[in-house]
Image 1 (cartoon, rainbow, N blue to C red):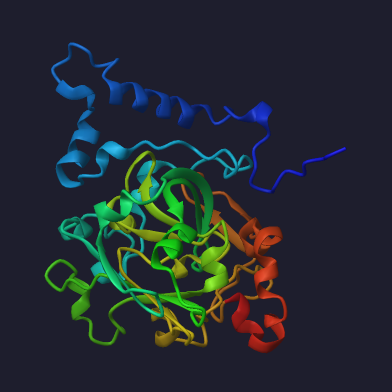
Image 2 (tube, helix red, strand yellow):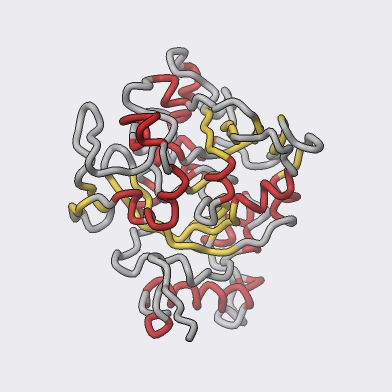
Length: 329
């Protein structure tokens, strides 16, 4: 007899519509998209004001909301409010404070080109809309854990990084993927802070990039990704600390050399390459044993690998001894 063992992120079929507030909202958005709710209203085209505002600045707005992938959910936690998730942000190119969402609106999302180079069959440059036409978008609910101990649970839209890797056609010698953020001095005021190692870069191993949890994010809460959250393309690595989740990506370089990321270059004694969540290994200046949930303010125990260990722990077999404490930084 075949027995299916559900994965840790899977929601039982009997509970598939238990997140009533969010699913009701998704249902309403879909109705708005086809005009059934706003038929005859002064807002032509079946678009609410918020979606109209997105459409004026992002040509991909009509792609959302996308279908939810029921395998990826977090039934034990409430969703973080959209307001909190989009107004409490880290994006150092715009400043070191959490309220950078207003400053981030200066960033232009079109044209937006993405360079794929290094150890690939053929280097290429794609515009973001061309890339979106080549991938299959879906929605996933993930936990997100910051090394500063705050945490959120949000519905990202996007596609597995494995799809981008397939487009890139890396050569057999490629062991790592180095990513780079936009560096627009006109829009990003903090690029003038010369003591930071701009541009922002991060890296993952090929094995991490191919893991099914590794997700290229293009949307949030059923709409295009807001600028302050890393529009138009960022990464979500839910088992790692949030500083690994690079935003507003413009370049992917496939390489045989391990990349040194922004934070590792800035302070490698505090921020290492691996950056896997581990409550037993404190940051040099504060504990990682607990985390604070945005919106509710609750303090809860931190989970090893942010609760995704059974699916990613095998990626790091044998590394704890060779990399020491940095493995879990």
